Amino acid sequence: MSDGELARLALAGREDGYRRLLERHRDAVFRLVRSLVGDSDAALDITQEAFVSGFAALKRYDPERPFRAWMSRIAVNKARDWARRRKVRSFFSRAVDIDEAITVADDAPISDNIIYHRAELARAMRAIATLPHNLREVLVLRTIEDFPEADTATILGISGKAVETRLYRARKQLNEILGAS
Image 1 (spheres, rainbow, N blue to C red):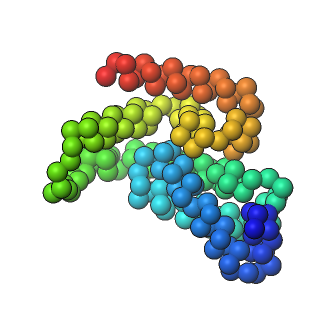
Image 2 (tube, helix red, strand yellow):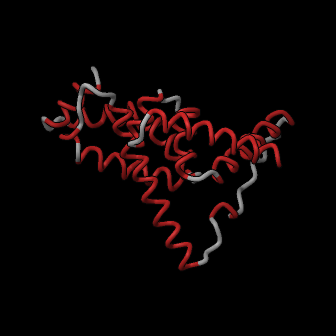
């Protein structure tokens, strides 16, 4: 069934329509949010919040358009809201960043190659996290989530030319950051 048909089922009160839409798109939305916020626990909460909001607003979904792009726009907005709330809380609490928390070591031996690639991935994700949110969003949507330019523009509410410009600037800044470290 298409996403539009599943949405119509859901709007008709069929729980399996909601369930199948969620199963079909939750992983992609979670990956997008995690890439934007850099915190898996927060990304899970934001993803759930995005689907709750999306399902509550399902009447406004146009079944002729891709559901994933529509949900991604909601998820990006929820991630922005989360970032704003986090910034305000951080300002007032001066709490230690959660990324500094101690991680539990895995006892299984890891090859040098895996260690190197994990370290490089972590380095790249830290560099992406330092980009301004408007550049980070475009970079994640176009490069990591592989959205077409038109869908990225729709999700972010900007023009296709703005997507091109921001992607160019994001890649340039990312190269400068990674080259300097």
